[in-house]
Image (cartoon, rainbow, N blue to C red; front, side, top):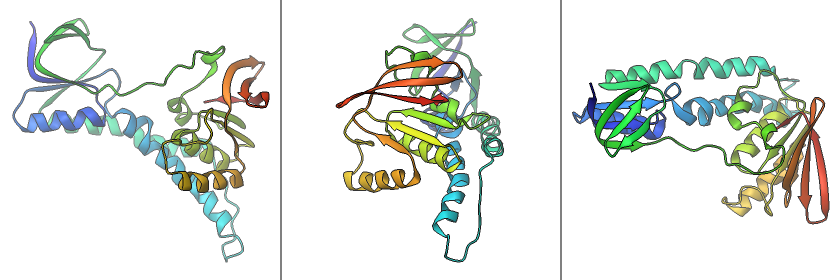
Length: 259
């Protein structure tokens, strides 16, 4: 038997959950579907867990800034404890979010939805029908189409690392890479490199503010390279060699992790 709804929301992140709740509160029959636990990028794999890592590693920055001003401290980051702290939030969010949706009258479903018609989808071998669909499946990392791309890990992988690699290279100088570079360096990584193919990182942000951040990044000890296009990633034993094309020629970066 085909079950019917007024609205089916595909994607259990911020962009879908708000719509599902509002529609349910308006009296619609609603289902929310996600192939993973509900919460999405912001709560589970992005904004919120990232802020927890930043909060911990900023303690190191505060100690550095307060040196000679009355604070005597030599803080260090225990990476595994920090990740456990992050998980104390992210592990509890899906049950809370799903319970909130169910309390609002939303059917919470899991699996990969596939459209089989203009008003039907297939989920786990069953057919569901809806008058309206709201697709909020988010984004996925872009592909680079370079040799060795399989050795790259994503920001989601970085947020779940059980141990901190000592040498890390970030491909791209967007806000995620810049924030993670600061986290890694404050946490004790010996070599952190950001490879940005454009003239400056954070291309869509205010140039004056970016210039201030670039200076702070370099003072922190992060190797920020612009006009650096990643051409290839090779695995050599336990380490990776990243080949980078720059205006003056080809360079390589040797590291333990490429993000």
